Length: 243
Image 1 (cartoon, rainbow, N blue to C red):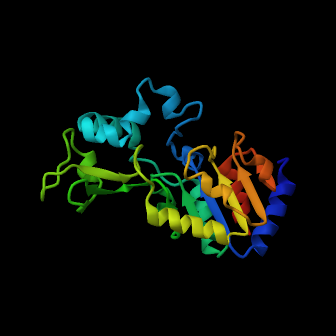
Image 2 (image 1 turned 60 degrees about the horizontal axis):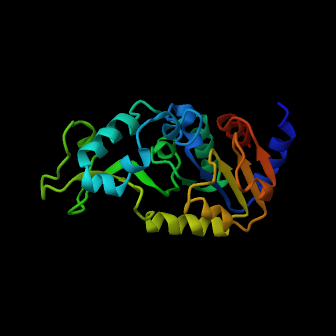
């Protein structure tokens, strides 16, 4: 393990930190069997369909049947369970080291692993609501039917509580994420290319002492980082959680 010294040093940094925060992307969940979007085997690379359109507000409004067909076929992974990365972050939170998990993912696996202070910048598939009246529903209302899921109260479309292309990020989650990054003295970025804005712009606002990037491919923020580790995220976080 050629990065043994870096792990030792980062563990000491985490032990002495007062407000360590984790910022994660799709790479956190790939070991759970959920492909990322832009990687070699990601949805955008392997699909011949216009993914950004099918995951857009425009598609939901103009062609809701096509939206739900794509959503059910490409976005749902009902058998996915937390992997070692999720579990390690939950353990670090339990030990009082990680104060917040900020995620670009919509799969809810951080909470399933036991993390409590999670801020979902792109919403979550674990919730659904009526696009017309705002009533909330269990996500199974959308997932178990081949037709349009309609609100029994007003006949509006029941949709996932995720941020679609053409929609703003959830203001409360974004504000809380920004607040935690502003407080942070240590920011760990894992499994994110840091190219999806405005979420990635939060990292630009980090002014703490140590930026630590764990990602298999380069990011635009590597030059600013105290440590850049190009290894398996579950492996690295598991090692770091042994404090």
